Length: 405
Length: 233
Image (tube, rainbow over all chains, first blue to last red; front, side, top):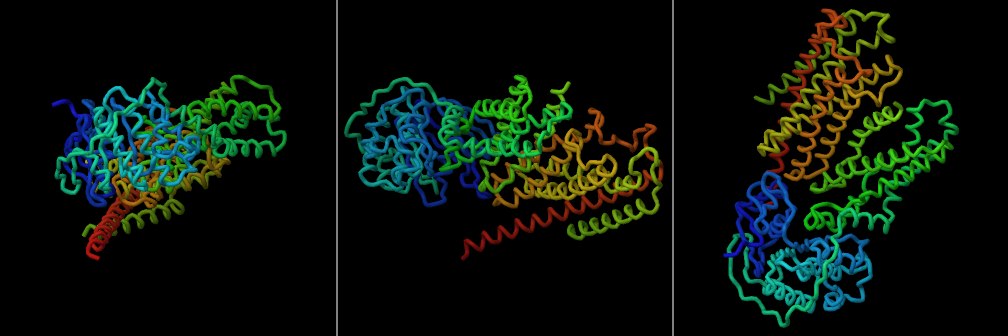
């Protein structure tokens, strides 16, 4: 038998203090549609998210094709397959455009198809250029599910599609379209795993698994009524940094999150009058670089923004990283240091401007890592990550010392 | 039985700490008037040094507990993590507060941002605040435990760094004065009071950790009983 697209090998997973999955082994082969059924809390979402490498394993391992992508010792590797994922939450930020989200999802696989016919089939073509935030819940759900299917339609090789309650909030016509697409993807050789309570979705499956007992039942799914006609072209992959950069520029989150604190710092320093007169170099550099440092200490706005609808989890699963601002802090830091230098009416030193940029860049991304470290928590916003920011003050002081030597 | 032992240790520790303070204020000899800006303030060291010693024990417990949870999934080790964080917070604040008082009197400033030992110790205390507040804000679960245990594990890097900081970097914070064999070592009476302080704080912190672990186990038992009641009702 051919290598399965997905293997869960003796996995054990905990949620909270409960062991939700214990010694579970299953395979998903090319051309197979697996429906996970069972009552609430049985572990359907847990199994799907574990297969997407979003939950840590207490025991066992997950393989995509023949690659171990996660194991119980915390090792994690990028999936070698095209991965389509629709979580229970939609995994999209409200500031994304509909067609942009679909293009981003397809870009992960390196190929794209025209998304407009698909949107038209779901009665969403007129919403293609709208922000996700402007959609109704049902419309947003359709976009999220479509974003999981399109990478497979564009892919050359069989891929893996994981859908958690895909039909939630969808009308009957849309569910019929969805079942037709799933049948087409099955014929194309993709593997689909669906966690669902909806009988209409279960009817698309070749195999049913009751997650409460792990009883497996073979089924005869509906055959597709037409062949897939989408024509795919190669496309450049979207990185988490380029996506984050785009979102930062669109939402101006950097202005609210970082630049305001920096400008306030500068304003407070300027309010003391001719502060720099008679100061030693160490103190002078400290004041000049303080706004850039303040901007970095505020951290990454994308961390907060990408928690909307669990967009961060979607990014971690499909791109192995959360969206972030890339080199934006470097540019912002240089500009803020330049502004600070001009405001204090001292000669502009290219060296100090560059150091300001690097200071913001490094500080910003260290705080980002601290912020991201709380992503797994049930209430990440309730944790005081700010308490750990003083860890950067000593390096700042040592940097100033270095500059004066 | 364990509860009685921990309470006994706490009582013994408190008594020893009170005795140390009395001896420090009334019996221990004064330091050289020429060597210090504020010789009277130096007596705060009989509190500061043993508290810092106890903090290192607490952070050691935090490290062992964190590693034990992450690698062995041991409930006892999670309780040790919790107790270590709470004890580290208490003794860390004692140390930082007393150090600030002495710094203000001796250096003219309560804090020096360029001093490695001050900053690394301050960070350890902030880490303990973060862990204690963070844990209380989250429901108990592997996600919560893994996250905070990872912080406990990585944060421990600061302990040896703090300890050796005065030997590596030329900084304001005084270096070791006990058992170094240098001329700057303290005299016998001073050493005796410091030793009593260190022993008292050690007993106190062990009692505190045992007591904390017991309280956490009672909390966990309560949660289990509530979960059972949820199913029955």
